Image 1 (cartoon, rainbow, N blue to C red):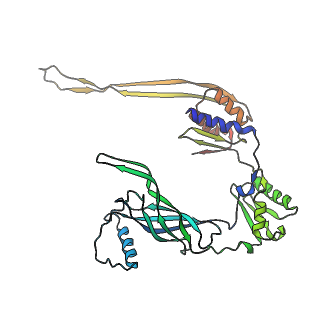
Image 2 (tube, rainbow, N blue to C red):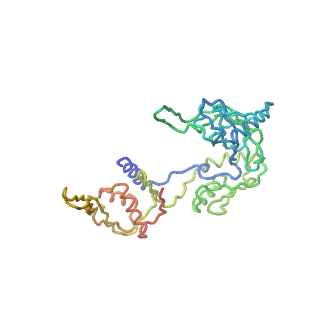
Length: 366
C-alpha cells in the first residue's frame, strides 16, 4: 500500500511541468506502413510425453495422419496413440516492407490438452493472412516460457509451458503488394486524436520545409503532399518529418487501478469548489447459537436457540475538507496527502468528486 501511495504521489505531483516535445514518429502512424497478422494450424513433435491425449483431441490425429501421408507414409486404418505430439496454433505479425527470404518470430500455442511444449519442434506450417494467401512458412524448435514438475502427491507449474516462441522461425515467402514510392499524398493518423496536436504537427512540418506541404483534415488526420516536399522519394520525405518534434496536447484524464491502488492524473485536471468528508463504517454480525438440553430423566427434546450478536463500528474520517474552485493537481494531492488519505480511499474520493460534477477530467477505472 505504501508503494502504491508513493507511485500515486510521484505521478500526481508532476503536474507543474510542461509537456516535453515528442517526435512525430511517436505520435502518428503513416498510412499503409503497417504490419499484417498471420495465423496457421500445425503440429509439434518431439515432446517428452507431454503431448495431446488423442482420445480427447481427435484433430491432432487428423493433422498427424495428413502430414504422414504427404510424406508417403500410409497410416490408413492404423491406430496409434503417441504422447509426444500436440496440435498448435501459430501466430505472427508480418512487418511492413518485409521481403521474400526474410525471417520473423512466431508464437506457438497448444489448443489440445498438451501439458507442455518445452523442447518440441514445429513441423513446417504455412501461415495465412486475412486474404487467405500464404505469406510465411514456420518451422523450428520451440522455446517455452515455463516449466512443470509433478509427482504422486501434486504438481507445480511455473509460467505457461503450453505456449512458446520460435525466434526467426518464420520465413517470408510472399511480399505485401504495397508501393510506397507511387503515392502522391500520405496520411498521418494520430494515435490520440486531438485538433490542437494535429494543428501543431501541420505547423511544424510546414515550418520545417518552409512551405505548405501538410494540411490538417480532422482531429486524427494530417495529409502530406509528397510532390510539394520536393524530396527524392516518399521514403526520404518520411525520414525527414518523422524526427520533427512537436509538443502534444493531452486530455485532462484520471486513471486509477483499484487492484493496486495506483492513481495517475494529468497536469490539466481541475476541480471546482467542493467539500469532502470521508469515513469508514464497519458492520459486524456474529452467530452464537445456544444449545438447550433437558434434564437426563425429563421427557424433553434438545433445542437450539438462535442468538445473534450485531455491532456497528465507525472509524473516524478525515473530517470535512474544502477544495477551492479551480484547484490545480498539486494542490488537490497535497491536501489529500496532508489528511493522511490512503490510495484506495483517495480513489473513492475522486469517484465521488466526479459524480458531483466537480472533477473536470475523463475518469478511467482499470
